[in-house]
Image (cartoon, rainbow over all chains, first blue to last red; front, side, top):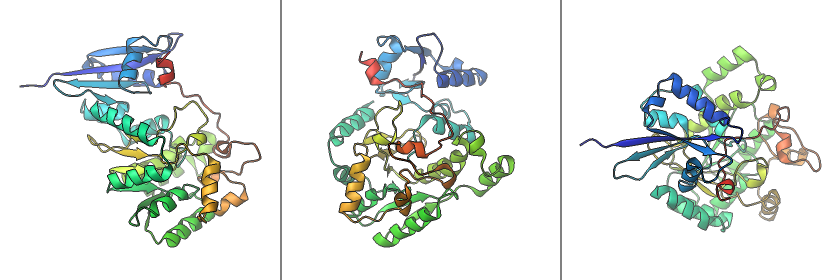
Length: 114
Length: 241
């Protein structure tokens, strides 16, 4: 029996309609790599609308960064990925370079205390 | 989802506790746990942890660009507590490539991220692959920007082993710089001599400078870069409106 998996990406859109910088970069990367087709759904977190589906999903899953990915498998708790390279490596089984991974960590994680 | 809820719940409970109580929880619940020691005032973590457990795992990132005072201080701490401090280094070939292509001070021309990525983050990641949890001296008052509050305990997704969990503890998250220094003085904790020379935040030598009266400690780091607003936050304050 195969386990059905549903993949959702949540991206943030500013009030002026533009995507957040990282959301735009990630989406472009995924498009170039043909990974967007592997997603079942892209949900938008509208900055101006806390009731939007994306903002509600962020609250539900206690996520405070965009973009993020929700992996839902039959009979299992949803898994949340806030780190793009981990999502593509662990869920989509794609390869990423160490330079790209370090760049994402540097841009995303506050490590200035080190 | 259960695990996330669990971490958030425990974080809420620990958030009102003292750094010592948070450390106690961390050390009692994780055998394979390491303290990240930057060679600055986060030495208080070592002092507090040493009073709980003597067999501490401590590591420091030697970027190759630290002040001589910081190297001396790391050694002083090692001897003072009679502990092993695992000094970890960047991969030589990557540093060589960076210096060959961009020189020794490339960070002044662009930003510090490429250099930090090679000299700090890559070795940090390698080190964190060997543990189940880590402890940092990160405090909320160090990051005045837009970043959400630093929790005392969090699920560290960026550095976790593939398909595994890594827990990060920030026992000093709720403390101020003053509380840290009160502790250092009250407990005769050794400290980096750079602090007596006007340095508040201490990092690599080319990227750290003393700060003047009234300046925030972050003004002593990467001062040539403009503060950029983080724009991808989905802060709860927005969601709750």
